[in-house]
Image 1 (cartoon, rainbow, N blue to C red):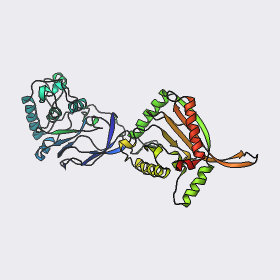
Image 2: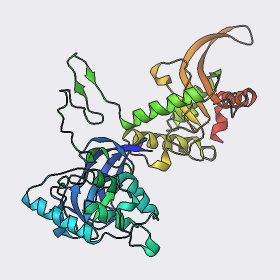
Image 3: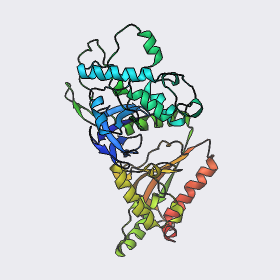
Image 4: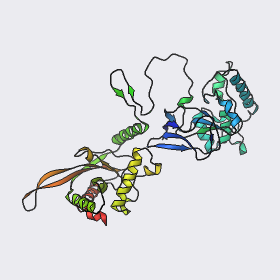
Length: 401
């Protein structure tokens, strides 16, 4: 994941926080998740608004300070890459911050710790803009945080603007921490343009509807929908899809469902084909059908609320897409990379057949279509898989053993 959205803040400026406290709800490419705090301190500044979209991983979105008295120094702070002209108090603090930054300026280093490298990548600063304090001249995470808190500007930018009046930056004590997250907010830190922009409708936050002059309603894509569109477009254009279809006699499944229902066990047709589905049921081959059905229902309910954990939707090997409940007889699904196979399940329908004795009869039939990565599966292996699936559903009592 390279970007994400900040849905809502769970904290406010001035609030004291402890490790484990919820900081915000973050929308990743798969789910909306709670971002938890890792340090003790006070929230000095929130750098991005709720609903911010397209935030790059690793950029700062909030500032935490160790001492409550340091909060006031960031009252007018607009972000490490924003220029800000404050009032008298802000200018005085900015001069003090600049003085402190100059006082600690010294030899620089291109030796970076892992945390320092991540912070630098989203801050706009380079190793040469930070004073190293680590052993053997290594730039540490604390060095980068101190530079960000003091309003340190990139040296290249400082050289280009030499002779101009510096913008006021707020001061921060040593130990001030710029909170970085995945995703985080680079967009919110960009300076506002002085040129007037043409009038246009404001872009709504993720998932918010917007009325337009044409009488229709624009519904922006969520982060999840954008990622799905990109990944499936890539899948369809780069993976050679092999398609195989089969009609499955569902009369035995219907009879088994009716028998289990009398015993108080309710199973849908989907439970018989949902051995592996996104969200992921792990070790489905070793679980009983009722256990799989219960786990699928629980995971699906949390997926609809965007409350899945990463390990519950990553690492699958085979997907099932069921549109039968919408009356779709058959369709071909697109492989979800890095998986190599997906099965499309249609609706059960009644057909007329000629029995072995030559008598006309009706059967309940369901069409399934397998989409396989032809680089992984050849036609014979894919056919064997589909034949085994058909055999199990036409003798479903095997699934209960």
